[in-house]
Structure formats: C-alpha cells, structure tokens
Image (tube, rainbow, N blue to C red; front, top):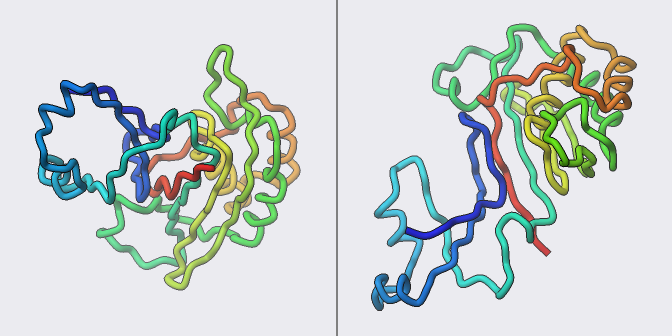
Length: 210
C-alpha cells in the first residue's frame, strides 16, 4: 500500500481522458517490487478494464501531481433537440430535450472568461477562495450536431464546471438572459437560480505543468 495524490478530483460519474497522479515509494516498497520495472503494462494487468495507465515515469524531486499543476481543462458533451437519440452515448453525453441556441451560449462565455470571483458557481468551503482564472470557455456545435463546452482554468472550485455549464444551458434555452448571467457572476453569491447539472457528459481533458 502507498499514498497516491491525483492532479484533480472529479465527482462521481465524471470521466477522465487524462489524469496525472504521483506516489512516493519507500526503499522497502521498491524492494518488494523486485527488479521488474514498474511499467504501464504491469499496472494495467492489475487494474479493472475501465481504468488505463498510459505511461509511468520517475518524477523530478518535489513534483506534486496536484500542487505542481498550473492548469486543467474539461470538456462537456451535450446532445439537444437537433441530435438523433443514441443509447450508446447515454453515459457520455448530457441529454437536453430543447434545441439550444449555441450562438447565445457563446455570447455568455464572454461574460465569464478571465480572472473573476466564481463564488456564484461554486460549493463554498470555509477558508477557501473562489477566485479563479478561467482562461478559455467555448461552446461549439460539432459535425454530428452535439455540443461541446470546453473550459480551461488554473484550477476549478467544487461544482464550478457543472454550475457554469448549467447556467450556459439555461441561456441556450432562453430561460436566463445574458444580463442575468452577468449579474449572477458579479454577485459571487451562490443562489437558487444556479443549477449544478448531472456529471454525465463531463470529462477531465488535460492537466498542464510548467
């Protein structure tokens, strides 16, 4: 047994295309591993089929999977009224019955990008800041008519991604105006209008380091 730290925690039901973790081995643990190198293949033989290790490397001194990271990105896949039903995507896409106005949602992204207080979109934790730098936020209608929301920031607060996407969906359904979205962000206070949508469709896309 050994302690392991991951770059970013995800809610139950969230997927990950890219995750980084590190663990420290004592001399005794290294000895128990034997002479066979600790490779991705060796680890994958021990893991369940829905988890895959892509690579293993010796980390630099002082490296920390979580605290050394300088950026994280997520993708949220949404199907709406323009998409044909596809049961095989049920676990990997959030289904919305109405047809979303992607242009309106994209206008909404411009109100959120930047160094801001995202308290309205976060589950508050005592003593923790809700100021984050949201570097990229885009909404794109893909070739198959599904919608991809891409978010990249230095870090994300708890529930932040799911709350932001939920608010953009409300804008796309015209249940919430751009002015209301702007006022919500500027208030930095979690209100009843902020809906944290289901984790289905959300994928941790990448972790970046210096």
